[in-house]
Image 1 (cartoon, chains in turn red, orange):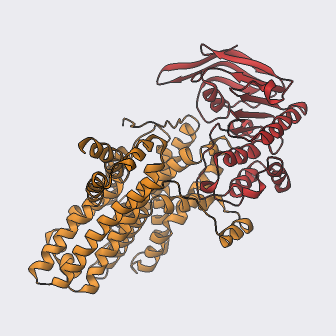
Image 2 (cartoon, chains in turn yellow, green):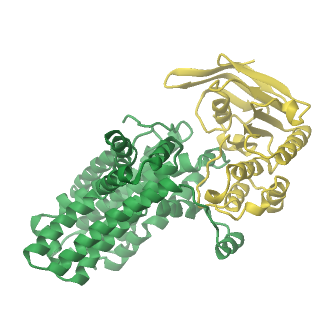
Image 3 (cartoon, chains in turn orange, green):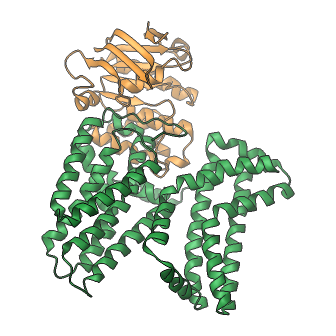
Length: 207
Length: 372
């Protein structure tokens, strides 16, 4: 379980998120909200990309502020619009992140195959379409045994077959005890996902 | 015509000079700081002495024109600049005068120096040199304008990956310490070349002075200070690379010392030319352990500057001003006989402190202008 306690995020002293308490048990969570409501900001804070006030921690120990490395070992993150240096290939990135997170090469390749991106892994990112970059980013986020998977708009730019695959992979991961936080403007049940909890970001709070 | 020109000038010309401000400051520093009128005249006389020597400035201008072309290619594909494609719909008579003026403005530093060379060539009746330089300048201005007009018509050319390249990519995975040096050499080749040429010449020049008079180690250390400080602009780009181009980097589970080790490796690879020049030209009066402390000082200075950038987001102009202040301060300290190892230790200590304190607190904001 992960817990957000007294969580606050501001930009230039202008508060954008304020969450008193929120816990996430293993399972899939659909984080909804209007454009600009703070979904991506919340995800970036949880992923450790943005500083914040308060606590984000696993209930059995690692706190993002106090144990940044231990917390990150349990987490993976995929951006809404992944941006990678153009001269690097998907394989370069996958191997790099995989080595740091100790994900076996066979497992990295397995996720690339499942997401139908194996054919494009040796192309430089600048030669890849936005859909391909998205798949590379998702393969990096899903491989390994993350306890917390944070996916910002994972279904955009994906073809329908990969959307189905992603839905089943997310269900598999959450059944095996992972927490998946997913933002999407499309209802998850329309994407074939059945078991999930919906949370709304409304007036800077998670309801 | 005027509104069209105004938009292009703001999006292309102004942005070009803003992005390359560090490079131009460096050139101005060399041109109007280290070199005097006599040196400028001597250099211009050398360039305009024959057709062979006249090729040297033209070759440098070709590199400059390539950098302009690379900048324009990147600028035009930015989503916020898509408005420029409407310009491609204008007639040729409207397009070309604007494109030539824009190209001329981007090429202005080369044109200014070229005019100086033309005057020198004309005054010494070197008409062949005059023809080479004037033709070179005109051809390059027209090439930039032509390239830009092609970009407007087909901005996103299909990027094909050759079989050999694909084979190599499949066989070898790029190690992380090479990510940044390659990214920089593709993104800012001119800046990288300029910095390397300047710092290597500076070190070789200072080391040569020891052949003509007796100096203690402080002169070479001052040369190292200037050379390594000029490399700090590369550190600024590293920070940009890490926080903007590879933003997922921060979310990876890595201890701070491991993150820092990647920085040290990348910077060491980029400082290799200066290290080689130092080893090759080291005066016999300077022992090896002192040379080692000079190199350590250069690496520590880079780390301190890198860690400093995590305190708060600053723009390149502010950073360059800070580099100048740091260089002056270190030269004063060297004059007061502060040894290289102490400077290295201070820089390293400050770097570790800033890095540990600010790394996770730092927030990179994508803003059009960041106030210093």
